[in-house]
Length: 208
Image 1 (cartoon, rainbow, N blue to C red):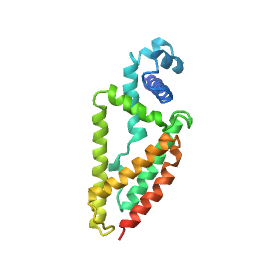
Image 2: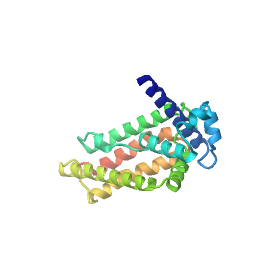
Image 3: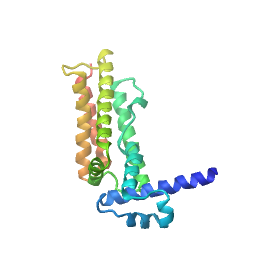
Image 4: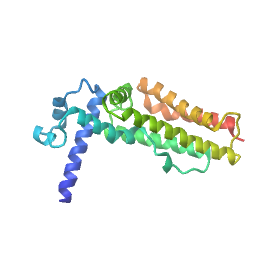
């Protein structure tokens, strides 16, 4: 029984990974159910045992991979100092980038390109509640950074005339800007190496 469950889970994972590759190569509208079935190498009967429509596949792809590829659980990042906090975030982001490359076969042309943004925009249009999920994540991100900045200020690590929330958003939006710029250039492997000096510079400007 365990082996059967494991095989079923592996088959479903294979479908999701294959579908993700196709959605990154093209977009939701251009990918057909027939293409997905053919790319998986599975029979129609076996495939439809897991999914009955392209919309269902797409929804599970987004739900399954969004947390792995695009978001960080800030509650799991230990906090000792603001510098340690953002250094951990850089490391975690790089680990996720490498994991995503491995997940889709190491094809650099598919990983974190502009198509990733098209995929997100498709999800916001097609999937009820996905936009709210993104907005909730953004709020949690600002909340986490603001709490760390506040703690650093109270401990005498940093000082600034800017508010805790303003400093938090400065770190976040700097990262967002670098990320978008490099992804549009299809050069995501440079995000971390370019972002670290900027965050280091910002930190030095407010460090006591």
